[in-house]
Image (cartoon, rainbow, N blue to C red; front, side):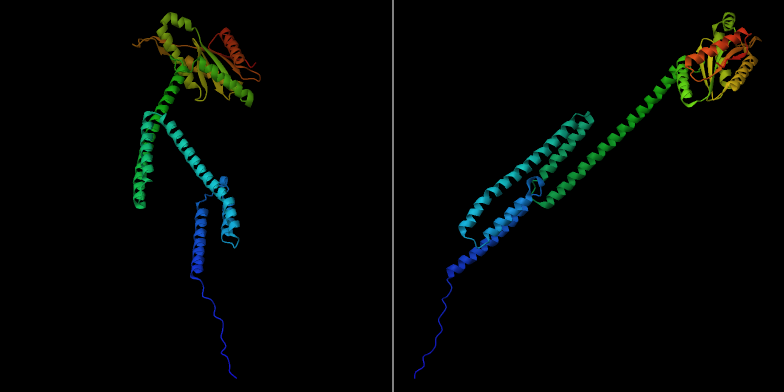
Length: 360
């Protein structure tokens, strides 16, 4: 019996055209994936544009393209997403352009504001603007190293300009500070002059009114003690009539000097008017105020003054009468002065050259 040779069926060889089509499809898918990666990277992380939602839609479309779905379904899905993608890209471009315009508007606003300053500042900002224009032109250079070196150079120049302006401003501020200090000193001198009696050098009536008013308010609020003495040079009109007003002025000056020597540095001495003076003794009660008033009477009476420059032997002595009072609850400046004036009148009535006090 003859045996037949067993043969296996031959497998058909793959069609080269199909292999080529498959390779092309695989390549296109890789390219598509890469393009989608680029598109994801193009998206700016700005919350206003909702980039996460856009990336999510890109991922869905990418999966659809790489799936085994029918081409019609893939095309339909792409058509739906194409408009969304294009709309997002346009919205992002518009947003960036608007941001750039807003920044330029802010820069223009600042530049315009700065140009309203004085001439020196306008020149400074002109130079700053010139440097900024150079930096803007640098951004159009192609070579990165050239950009870096050019930027470094321009930034150094910008820093020099800013340092120079800072030095100029410091000098200007120093000059202004000196002028302010000078004006403050002149103002203080003018105030002191306005509050000082030009003849005797002690405080004048205006200074007394202000000081006494504040003193009464403080004493009423805090319960502090102080005394007020009203002094009058005895028979001053007779001195003027006998020796003349020049000698009378010298007597006023000498009397003020004696009073200043007798009281403390924190006590207050003012010329009340004519030959009348007022002394305010800080923290003094009635007893101490009377003691101080009597001491002033003795000091003034014991001094002798020449009446001419030749010292011919003519000497003049003066005396003073003093009215004493102290601050009481509910007192005002007017009531204190009136009470002291009444005490002074009583001293005159009792023979002058003495101190008389009134408590209330």
